[in-house]
Image (cartoon, rainbow, N blue to C red):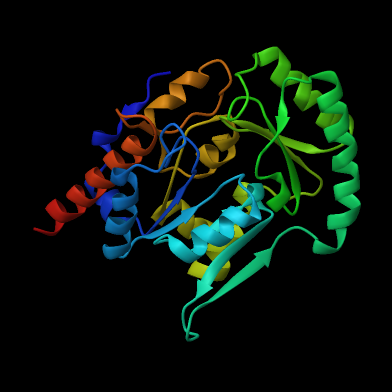
Length: 273
């Protein structure tokens, strides 16, 4: 797939961007770490008045920390089950959470996910439940390469099939297979967040928002957002992605995110001079 280099991103559009939705693992992070370049880029966006909203399959515990400690407007967690933000008008600011999923179904769905967990580990004993599973509210994450040796595409597909045989929704990230019960997903919650926290309707988002990601589970976001970007390591998924972003950075992971930010801010500055 020949993607446009992000250096070709139009200056006029760069100036119109007011919010950036971003994946975390292998988009903001690099080999499991947030590099100084990527974290500094988040602060540069905040100081430029651009909202940043990470969207992740990571757990509620991670989301609590990120919403409190990072320079972001909010965080969407567990693949769209909820979002968190700091209620800044209060003093001191308070963490608030809004849910797409039905909280009343947590225990019922947890029992069904436990059955899936048992079957996955029985049939593919070399995978593991994600280390952050105790801090999840709505989904089950199966680790196929983060804290275990990398598994084959065929083994990952077997995990997906087990989830689906139980009627669960599944998404594959660069490190986990996530499964849950409910009709939420990252895109639905991004639209809800835009409406509730940014007073932006879907048309506003397609005009003034940008999404950056790296893996197959980002395809609905690439499809919805005309201004979509992949970091360079997205090419690792050539056989698994059918809906691609419009642009691609030259650097992978967090360095690619920082590259994108530098280009956007430079184009905005050049346009104002």
